Image (cartoon, rainbow, N blue to C red; front, side, top):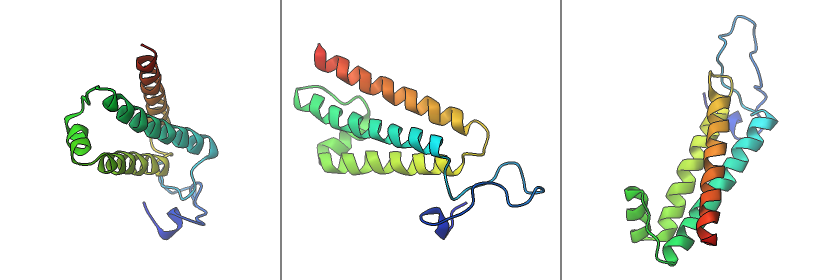
Length: 125
């Protein structure tokens, strides 16, 4: 699944041979999927930033694991949240030719778009 080319310079975009299995890993993510994943990561960043803003105004974090991390150090919260999100989105991109991957990416995009919209709604109330 991962090779040294997964990070820079890989050429695998599709199957090499017709008899290769239908579900295969790639080194290069399709541009459209890469844009969706990058925007989803931007929404993760906005979610973390807006969450810290809400907490500064007296709000509460509903996720108990993230709440513990915020209590320890808000920077630790950011590192863990964005590290997990980035790793997961990267692995999702490598699986672009597997069933339902594009649906999962689109669903995550819409979910975090809605979450950022909810944060903005809370700011306006």
